[in-house]
Image 1 (cartoon, protein in one colour):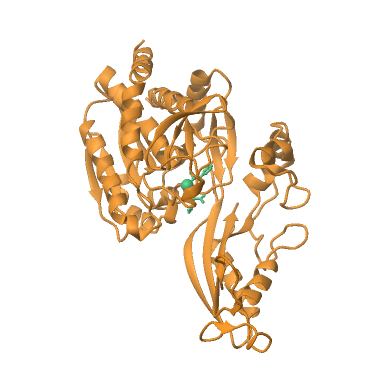
Image 2 (spheres, rainbow, N blue to C red):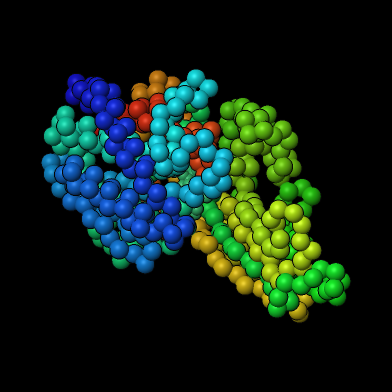
Amino acid sequence: MSLDAVLARLDAELPQSLDRLFALLRLKSISADPAFAADVRKAGEHCVALLAEMGFEASLRETPLHPIVVAHWTGPVENPDKHVLFYGHYDVQPVDPLNLWHADPFDPRLEERDGVKVIAARGAADDKGQIMVFLEAMRALLAEEGRLPVKVTVFLEGEEESGSPSLEPFLAANAKELSCDVALVCDTDMWARGRPAITTSLRGLVGEEVTISCADRDLHSGSFGGPAWNPIRLLAKILASLHDDTGRVTLPGFYDGVEETPADVRASWDALGRDAESFLGPVGLKTPAGETGRSILEQIWARPTCEFNGVSGGYAGDGFKTVLPAKAMAKVSFRLVGKQDPAKIRESFRARVRSMLPPDAEVAFHPHGGSPGFSMPFDSPWLAGARDALTEEWGVPSLLIGAGGSIPVGNAFAHHLSMPTLFVGFGLSDDRIHSPNEKYDLESFAKGARSWARILKKLA
Ligand code: BES
Ligand code: ZN
């Protein structure tokens, strides 16, 4: 059977596939840091070259920030009535704190960690490795069959880790060119090592940066402390007001649009056996901090949160400085579920901050993206074939899971292109994405490519 030949080719050419992945991993495409803008572009150009070499009509398309890669397969196709759009992001998260990395984040290498072979580098799992499993699957299909199973358009953005500011305008402006039957996204996790899964829900995200300013300069905390307002004190009080003692968020209207998870779904999640010990243990924790009375999976998959991602102000360097700072800043994010409205939540947060400030304090807000939660209905026709393909590849039934993270494209594709999105990924919860020493299991890479080859054949 020709699928067997494709799979055998993927196995035989794993070293070359890894070389191609490593070349992409060497490019420092950190989208959040303007200092790396040229490197982001280089990574986009690199993807265009890879796709063009495979025979795609590939181009780099400008946006106000980082360019988008669009590539169309115009060669022979087994079933030309089906057209899929593959989405991935070629940008990566910043690498700090750099001193915690065991090796250069942009010098990819194969390592063994706890007896498991892994690909170590920034972006190995999020998302360059997961882009390459799809491209390698297509490369093997083309080499073996001389055609693709279905029509394919590839869409790779360079701003995902920065909230995708150019995504929606680009989709709106290019809706006709990009509309396909379904979007395939490879940027999510499996349930566990060896256990494949399709992600049918992801949380949304609202990012806010808030800066509070009081005096017009830093002051001596002895000479002025007392009469002069301290912005860190104000900020701390505001941040502390956002959760109650049961872990619920206290903003008015925050839970509007959040539905309770049906009892049977909760029971099926409980049956997966992810308790606090098994979930928190691997990251050095023991006791859950979230909403009282909600299981770990419910908290991650079905409940909204408010988190503080960074705080700064005053003197935090070595030694001690008795300063009363002029400014204090916090980066705050909200994960959203169900029909929670990002704009309303942002407004509710801003209103809370303003309501807690004295006349002498000024506040500035800076938005960092906003997208609602995503969910795919369990009876979507796109699920069955992909589930079967995954089950065949991994030899165990694939699961339908949720994700706590956010990938704004699902809703953007639905809204601008009326296109459903299927999230299939091969990441693992110990991949350390966004952290030092990110990795992607070698098995995820090898079997991920084999899985996509099977899925594409099933789609045909
Ligand atoms: N790949 C992740 C999202 C993810 C992580 C999905 C784990 C499933 C499991 C994605 O690249 C990401 O990190 N997204 C950001 C989005 C934000 C910057 C707008 C996130 O979730 O923080
Ligand atoms: Zn990420």
